Image (tube, rainbow, N blue to C red; front, side, top):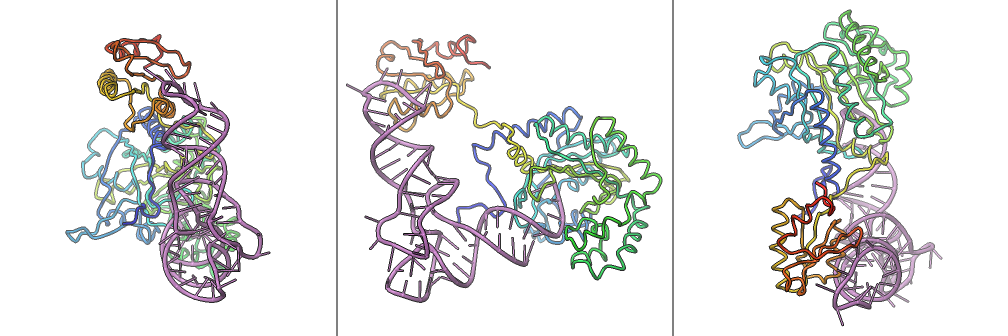
Length: 424
RNA sequence: GUGAGUGUAGCUCAACUGGUUAGAGCGUGGGACUGUGGCUCCUAAGGCUACGGGUUCAACUCCCGUCACUCACCCCA
């Protein structure tokens, strides 16, 4: 039996879960503030859903999906991203009949079979939001600002917002052709990948990182110059709304996204404190997605935000993150009778809502105190023969060392009295 | 999937150009302090040096293979 998790899949240990809970709490606060409600969808979906929406030519579908036959012989896939499942739920439950827009968020594991690297895992946790039903450019701006607000609340800096518009099915073909025309003469000098992109998905020619391909993109035609009137107006409005909200961003004409369903707005929030995998949040508009799944024509915008990357970036920036919460009370006892009495007191403490624990290792009193200190106990309750005889106990305050004798049955109420130091 | 680097105690790292019982700090258990934590000191446990093979009188050290991890590419959160 191999006692190790699968490649690219991490355990989150007790020392680390508090920081996760902090981030999740902030996510929920921000979502509540912006009017997004939580949705939970299954980990598995029909493979078809992702092939049709994310796109047959995308890398995600071609080589990164965890796909297998279930026992009924159906091809199923562990979700590689969250937008398609949310859109599927929107259609399945006819949420287009509800007041629009429908705004949802999720915190859920995503799976992609890739080679792990700093900030890249096979299972990662994504916080995502989706706003279905409105094509208003102010919604695009809102979506971006949800991400930025979260980062702001967490104290994450060193970010840059990259924004672009890749047009719609009406104007994109003209752009695609212009791009092909531009690259046609130099195809032979491009890398192998780019030669394939030239055929299949010319937009992607723009984000190749190889020098031999990179030098051409400076003078390549830009998406924004080929937008139809509606798309151009939309893009202008998005920028205006974002600017009015006080956010700074950069228009990056080279930004195109890897998933096929995007239309118009695409954006990416990049952190300067991550390695090569520096995109912490990215998304865009997907006006054709719902219809493609079988719903009525419905616009939508959203983003995905990698929580592992967010945590990494926070750590790299030295943002203070919480560790395990300390105990209110540790019950230390000497002798068998005192141990039994201690257990009864422990129950009373817990019943009163005080976080408390005792020693189950038969440690010496001294070692129990030491252990209590490590657990971060604010008070230690001492119970030995002397105390038992008097039906009382010694309460020690760990930060000051002050001690009191308190009758056993009054311990919880004594501790809860505000002046004695436990603040709820 | 491609390329490179690294695998020594729970963690972070030592061990000269191959040389005999593989060390230290932190952490963990116990003690100095017979019923009182943090500081200090003492002490113990903990290693098939990732795994398998080869070279050699001798391998943590050199060679080959496997696996794992890391970084970069592809791509993405």
